[in-house]
Image (cartoon, rainbow, N blue to C red; front, side, top):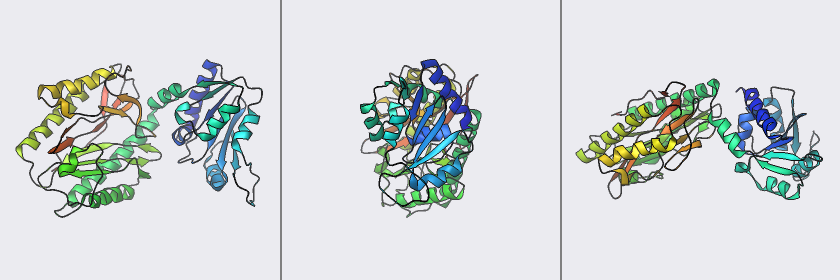
Length: 365
């Protein structure tokens, strides 16, 4: 991961806003700026003189080994007294407070504020500037290496999905299918799951965030399979709706409508297109079939280190798509008491248009 590029972007923000120091908290942000996976409990202090990472003592060796530059100091902390082979501090908040002595303007991403940062802000006399919008926008525009990591995470998900479908048979449970999907993703190189895998059949498919159950997968009904892999800290997100056996006429027609909505919207998105217009396109196509009232969530979202990132593709969002953004488009129809259908692709916004990153077709059975 090219964290140097990302740190340079952060320093540009510091310079433009006249910030003498920045505190970064939240695992995704610290991963973005350092390349360290799962930096639990860490705080990052950036000054004009350098970068300091405050890490729990139990993670000190792993974090130190992950740092590829000498420009970053790693300082361990432990809130309880232990006999350790290395010197550590007991209160990271007090340490940062002392380090900030004389600093008049401090930047913090308040989207990830935790209790430690709250304590710090309460005792500071420094002018605190919220840079959350700057960082979320920064992260939304992917560098080439980030796109390739996302692409790899998506390939893992797609291959795992196809292998699972090839093994599906009557009598399997929803949770059983989840286990198969996640095993294949691990086997194919996933570092973990981007979110809780969804497998929902029968009446369970009407819930967009269905909880997979020990119920046997219902044949001849839509089976929504929503999954994502994490590869080198970057996420993927894909949904396909399949069936064991043939779908009845009503379900099949709704499936065809959802495919039409997705492909039409993919042709519509591109650089500098308004996010609200993308959502409007989805709902407009659905309304022609009288199905728009059954689409009860937003159209999509950005994807990167987190599976849900800026921008949110929804009605009323006053933002435009920009080259380098990776977004999902995930139209769905959920008819209460009957069934649901959802299909989701990942799309890279380019300078001249868009690239659908998925390779899997929509009809998989």
